[in-house]
Structure formats: C-alpha cells, structure tokens
Image (cartoon, rainbow, N blue to C red; front, side, top):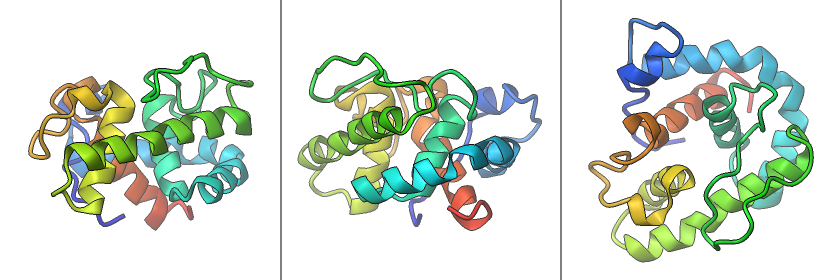
Length: 170
C-alpha cells in the first residue's frame, strides 16, 4: 500500500461525472463501490490469503473492473501463460476470484525479469498494469499506464486499493 500513485485520469473520473481527477477521484469511486463490495469481503480476504495478495488490492481491481456489479468481478482478459482465458465459475464466485488473482500473481515474475532494477512496489504496479494490457505493453515505470485502459489503470487501481485499506477495512 506504499506504492506511489497519481490515481484516476480525467477520462476515468468522467465515467462517474466527477469534476476532479487523480487520487481524489479514485477514492470517490472506491467509496461509491464500498457497499456493494461488502457482499464479497470474505471471498476477497480468503483469496488474498491464498495468493499472498493484499485483499485491498483485489478490492481495488474489482472496483475498477466491474464496480462490484454482475459482470465478472475482476474480469478475465489477459493471461501471462497464454492459457485459456475463459472465466471459470460464476461471475461472483471464489473460483473466479482465484482465477483472476492467480493471473495477477503470474504477471509479477515476468515484470521482475523485465525490470529487475525496479523496487518491489514498482514491480507490483507494473504487474497491475500488465493485468490490463500484458507484459509486452509495460515499457517504463515513468509511463507504466501508457497503453492501459484510460491511460491510468494501475494508478487508479492502486489509489482505490489504498482507500479500501485505509477506510474499507480490507
């Protein structure tokens, strides 16, 4: 939760008709999703424990990907192992959360290998960006979100995760 972040872009903030952007916008969107997130709290914590990922980060991804609504909580798109990306289980089940969290975890080592001089926090942020666009599209830390959705994916997810850690009890 010590990862530096600029938060949501104006484009992402506009989805909620927010006049602000950055960390403030990310926090507002996380707070908006907090009540719906409660339904998945135990599953999120269980999956976080299983994969050694902070549950707040899983909540941050869910908030960004689906707003904790019925569309596949973490959405399964890119897979570092090029395995079948077909979502497993029901959209809100623990199996789906496990599949998506494992995909995130599987991006960490390739990012470490590609950027060995990055700190562990920077590598995690790179893995979050890769969760959205794949390792090949993560080119530098200074512009880690260059090719991500909205140009802010990892920054927005991190800011939302920080809100869930501080205020959401994850």
